[in-house]
Image 1: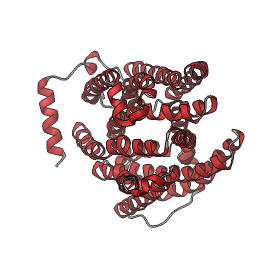
Image 2 (image 1 turned 180 degrees about the vertical axis):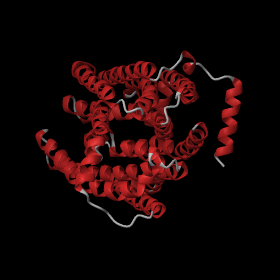
Image 3 (image 1 turned 30 degrees about the vertical axis):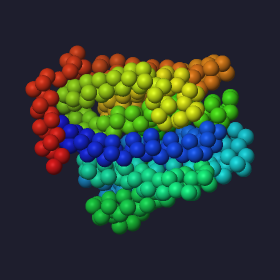
Image 4 (image 1 turned 60 degrees about the vertical axis):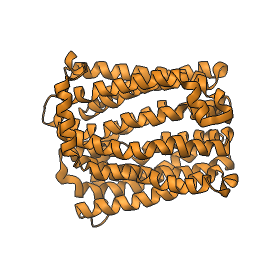
Length: 437
C-alpha cells in the first residue's frame, strides 16, 4: 500500500503542480484584473451558490464509488452503467432545487443568466469527478492524474489566447464561463471514452433497485459533502448578501492563494482514500501511512502559512497591482486556514475510509452553524476580513475534532505524528522513484 500510495502521489502531484498553480495564480487572477472586483465578485458568489448544491448532482456517489471499487474492483462494469443512469436523473433534480432556491433569494434575470451557465459547468465537472473515481478505485493513478488537469490545460489555452491578445479589452466574465464549459465538455467526453474501453462498457442501464441501493449507501457521503461545501463556500454568498459584490470580490482575491495551496492537500487525499479503504477492509494498521503523510503535510502547511502572512504585502502587490492593499488584511487571516484544511484532508479521508460518516456529519453541521454565526456577527463591521475569521474558526473546529476522533478510533500512537527517521525517508524516496517509472 505504501508503494501504491507513493506512486499515486508522485503522478497526481507532478501533473497538478505543473498546471494548476498557473491556472489559479495566472489565468484566474488576470480574469479578475480584467473584469474588475465587482464583476468577479458577482461571478464568485454565484459560483459558490452553484457549488453548494453541486452535491445534488452526485449525492455522495463519487466518494462511495472510490471506496467501493477499491474494495471490490470486479463490480466496476456493473456500477459504471448503472451509476451513469442515476447521474442523468440527478441532473434534473439539481437544476430544479438550485433555481428554486435562487428564486427564494430574489435572484433576477441577470443572476439566472450566469447561474444557468454555471450549473452546466457544475454538471460536467461532477461527471468528470465520477469518471475519475473509477480510475482512483482501480488505483490507475496515471490516468486519474491526466484527467485531473486536462480541463485546466484546455482553459489555460483558451483564456490565455483571449487575455493576452487585443481581445482583452472586450473580455467579460461570460467569456470565462464559456471557456470552462468547452473545456469540461471535452474532458468528460475523453475520460468516458477511456474508462469505457477499459471496462468494456456497452450501454446505460436503469435499475430501480440498484438506484435505491446506491443512494442509500451513498446518502451519508452526500450529506457530508453538502455540509462541508456549505461551510467552505458560504462566505462569499453572505458577503454579497450583506455588503455587495465588491467585498465578495476582495474575499475571492485573498482566498485565491489559499485555494492554490489547498490543492496540494487535496491531491494527497486522492490516493489516500482508496489506500485507507483497502487497509480498513483488510483490518490492517494505518499508522505507517499516517506517518508517511502527516509530517510532510504539516511542515508544508505551517511553513507556507507563516511565510505567506509575513510576505502578504509583496504577494498581493505582485498579483493585484494598484488594488493590492484591499486584500492584505483578509489574506493574512484566511491563509492560516491551510493548516486545518491539511489536517482535514488527512484525517477526514481516514475517517471516511473507515465508514465513520455519522461523526463526520455531526462535526460538519457544527462547523456550518459556527461559520454562519460568526459571519453574521463580523461581516457588518469588518466585511471580508470578518468573513475570513469565520472561515478560519469553522475549519479549525473541523480539523481538531477529526484529529481527536481518528486518534481514538484507529488507536494512533504518538509515533504516528513524529518526523520519520532519515533511513525511512531514504526508503520512501527509493520506493517513489522505483514505482513512478
